[in-house]
Length: 160
Length: 126
Image 1 (cartoon, rainbow over the protein chains, first blue to last red):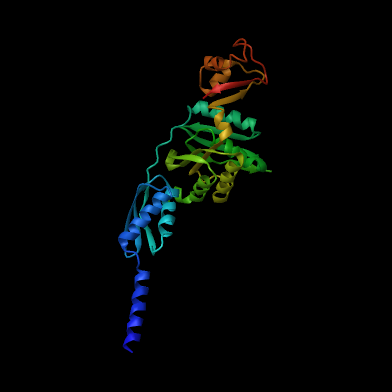
Image 2: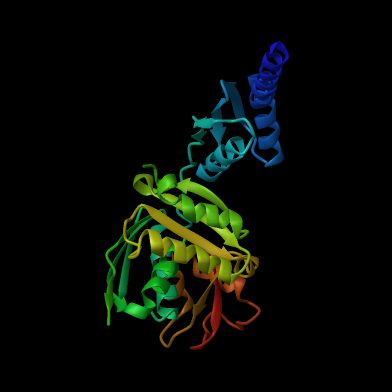
């Protein structure tokens, strides 16, 4: 009877150890290693009761998401609190002066067969008006967005 | 929701299909993605995803400026096709540059700054 009791206790203890096999410190290291292996840098990891908290500043949202997935994939991590922030973005400068951009876009639109679209550029921001054939619409928007503008007010209409 | 969150699937896709990009902030907080896609297909995938997120491309909060690696290799030159009635001064004015800049970049195809012909493709330094 006593032996049986001890066996149960031993099994229970073994199960407990297996479940909590890794201390928070071990987990913290495991998460940090996993992030490094996945090419994510600049993240500080803290683990408390199996919950990983990520802090720091990363390049953009995709790195933030990746860090979350990597940390969550580590065995023993119950959940991830993602407190990462994304870097402030640099302010864009227009690729050329307003008249130059207007000229370039107008010419490129003409070349792409987007007659009917009119553009006016003010301080790098383009306002697009007019109407282009439905089938051409996406291509015309592409032409405008690839010109080096820094803002857009797209009022272009789809014709038949 | 931040703009990066709004367009995150598009950015994830860029990472997956080998497009290199940089983010910047334009007029009124506009999120600008400037980058180079490895192929025309990869670029089209990004535009397809953009169309899914903003079907009319008119939310005004995002600019997708992706060129293909092939186009990027061509450099920062723009091409102007000469039309009847064009002259270098007129074309230069259209782009806000000096006529001499166009002349300098096209000496290989132009014999004289006054002699340009419809159909000629002039390199315009931007």
